[in-house]
Image 1 (cartoon, one colour):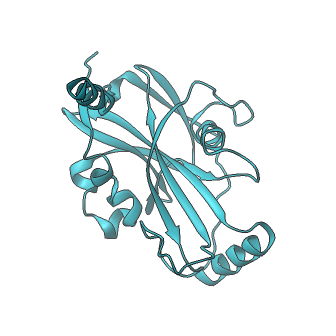
Image 2 (cartoon, rainbow, N blue to C red):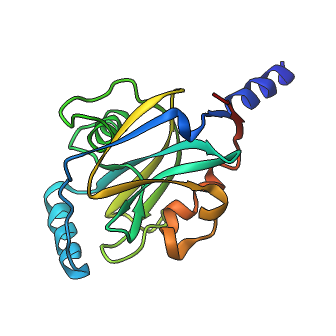
Length: 208
């Protein structure tokens, strides 16, 4: 029985990834992006917190293969910083439904049609913002009773073929795990920590 449990656990930790060439990438109308100073952002977060309480965001980790190495699909904003596809949950919205909505909004043809075929897998990790001006951190101290933001990362299982349609003011890039690992200054603490979160998985590269 123990050997069967170990075999089942091992099979659950295998992620199939398909070549980047299996996917189509197109563009659509630019999406509105907030351009604000740090002080403006802090004031906006304070206002939202006063009205809605804890801000909960969900983001997806999408993997493809290129040069026999796993790559993460990232969105680049204004040729400067990088982010994962996802965003803030609406009041009462579940993590899975919210992430499907945000993935469809960012990566599908129509923002009004939610693609129910997004296959959301397990939650890889959670990050917390304890104050409006602090960076996200991958733990919540027991003495912090009122965190301001929670970010959850989910593994998104891609099919063999899929069409991605990205707003014109964003770029979608496939970045290798080896480049992301430890590159805090370039990708920030959340994205640069993805390789560690994926370390328990084995990757099964499936060719065309």
